[in-house]
Image (cartoon, rainbow, N blue to C red; front, side, top):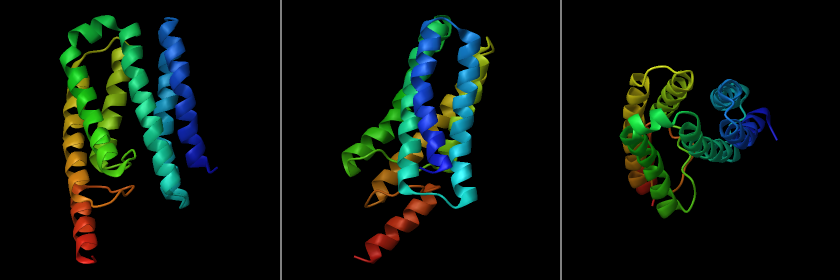
Amino acid sequence: MSVPNLLSVLRMLLAPVLAVLAWLGAPWLFLACLMLALATDMLDGWTARRLGLTTQLGAKLDSWADLLMWLTLILCTWWLRPDFVRQELLGIAVGAASYLAPIATGFAKYRRLISYHTRLAKLAACAVGASLILVFAGGPALPFRIAVALVVAASIEELAMTLVLPSWQANVPTLRHALRRGATRAGSC
């Protein structure tokens, strides 16, 4: 078990901790735990690339940790900021549906969780994470709305990638890369 994989596992373990803290109404402890979880999300991939430890297992662990974390955060937002959920329900629904659509499509095509880790998805995740820190600290909704737009764009790219890639592949940074890989595989058949 490498350091990057341990960071992904830690994020998985932090998801239920976040849920408990939100349920108990401990917003500042929740916020501290959220920042730790978001830091593990940024550090796992960076550490893996920096140390030359990128693996398919690591990509899968990261993807499962992300899914668990984001689903947990939807529930936590309802418990800690129900006013925000009511105000931004459409954005939350669009963001969640956009996030889940490529996952469902990937399961339908590859029978597994996609693990593309695209540049746009990383940008969207950072934007969502930063906007949620602001939301839980009582800040404005505008950064969240911008983050949702990025999630939608990242999801469209991931859906297109799933359509063009003939088989499951991890760590495909952009649609352009997927098109090249898809053409390469089609040419070698």
